[in-house]
Amino acid sequence: MNQRLYALIDEDLRSNKLTLPSLPHTALQIRTEIESGHSNVSRVVCLLAEDIALAAGVMQAANSPLLKTEHACQSLGEAVNRLGLEFVKSLVFSLSISQLFAPSNDSLEKRFGLLKYHSTKTAAYAYSIASLFTELKPETAHLIGLVHDIGTLPILAYVEQVPALIEDTELLDDFIKEETLALTLRVLRQWAFPEVILEAVAPQNIDPYTLKAKDYPLVLAAAHILANNDIPHDEPLSFGKEGVLCSRLSDLDKDTLRGMIKEKAEIVRPLFT
Image (cartoon, rainbow, N blue to C red; front, side):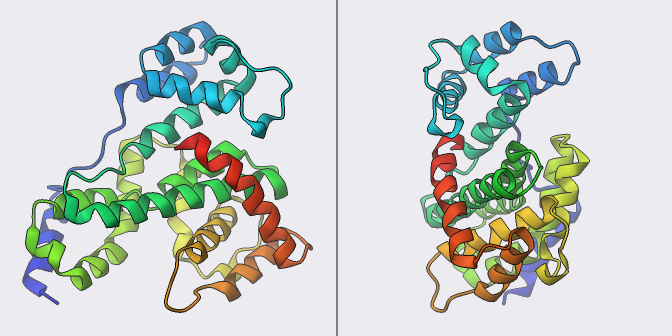
């Protein structure tokens, strides 16, 4: 391991020289409007209309099989009314965050792709688990799943400027493993995310055997392991922990539970990416 290079990036991290990702202006405007306490659908629709991709995402979600409605929405206003303002806020954040998983350097394309795959999979599983087995808000669970590793983005953005670090995969893997959580919390605080999301992300490395309450940390832990087991490995990982976490969610056998979660997640994932 190149200790000098590690020390250099660590020093830049401690001195706040790493550039943290920013959310698109439209997403921030929509959050401000909805959280203002006097928001209305027409104002949110006007803001959505300024971003074609976000507007299309809202329409797609409103007309998806997830909501099991008989009639398709014909306008943004109908779509926002059907989804509700809180759901729209989470959806807009999820769609905006998904756009951040894009490399400017071809040599990091595989890493960005794997990060996006794992994050969107975790998010879809979190939504599915929350909606099927808890009283939690599925859209909040989805957002937690999507951002749980967001701290990897500023590291990869930094690495794009340091070719030697791209080539030293062992060093990069070690640094990402050690620093992602701290950077994730820093990014989420910069984005002014609520404490419920920070608290769910923070304990992600706690032994899953200690998680019992049906709260967001448990949902994230279960979703994280399900997503991790979807990625091909030389040897299967975490299947024992998957069984333990599934037992915390339901008395159903693990295979039935996994099947239910994955079936719903397959519907959810395309809507938020």
